[in-house]
Length: 148
Image 1 (cartoon, rainbow, N blue to C red):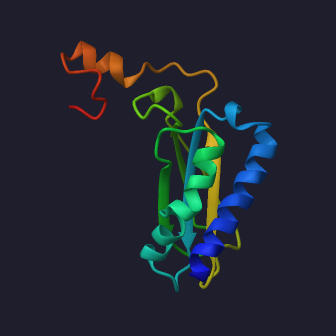
Image 2 (cartoon, rainbow, N blue to C red):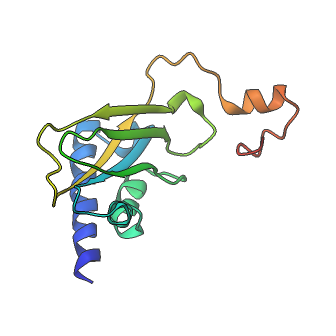
């Protein structure tokens, strides 16, 4: 139970910090989450940190999202790239907001540390059409963006 309490606190704290920078949840169009565990951790630990509603629902609610948070989780030594794949907060088929950001922290994670990230983003001057146009051109149902 303490673990879920910790995730609730982290979810609220990170949401408050990112909304302060964005000025409001309405200003967030694309979002994401990511976790990196050190070498003594397990990949499942990274998943457990960010794939619970105790963590992500604070952010999702604050930005009025209808979608799941795009995510990445990995395991590695210090300086492991933190990959943050963003997508539109209400429309998974809107490629205008598909963008993977990357950064690293030179001395983290240590072997017994975890990194947890939430992000906002997207392409400010996108030149890519959305998935629905492609589906229509290919003769597929544009109301099913996961269709191929």
